[in-house]
Length: 184
Image 1 (tube, one colour):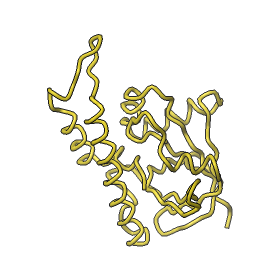
Image 2 (tube, one colour):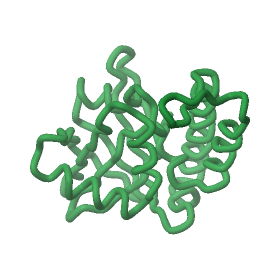
Image 3 (cartoon, helix red, strand yellow):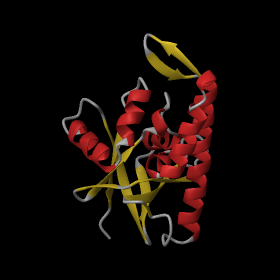
């Protein structure tokens, strides 16, 4: 399931921060505090669990619950597994951008990309569920060198400031995906 639903769920984020809050779980390197790999692994496992629960609630309620956490809207993204060929569904922050949605592949600041991004690289045909409405769509990965990347990134950070925190936590440039629903 997904990873970015933690980005806007305050109590889950606080739990992840609590895991990281133990003084003996940090090491200081050139004046910066870094989490040890054990704490990072716990954080990403927690993100995965919370995301699965969120996704199940969204799915089982047929889009009546789980569509918004606080002021942040969510959608369900369904991709096709790059190895398995199975449908994979993940709740993600739904950032409206014109007639499109932009999705942030932050995985909570992980050094690796989320699985759903790998799936899109192999097959950009996806499905999105926004509330009770389900649409087929095409996904396009926006590269950091693309002219629209900076504008989309600013919109993402305006939606949830945690994306800026996640970017600082990783050395990779966090990918952005633009999803364009097909007209019905």
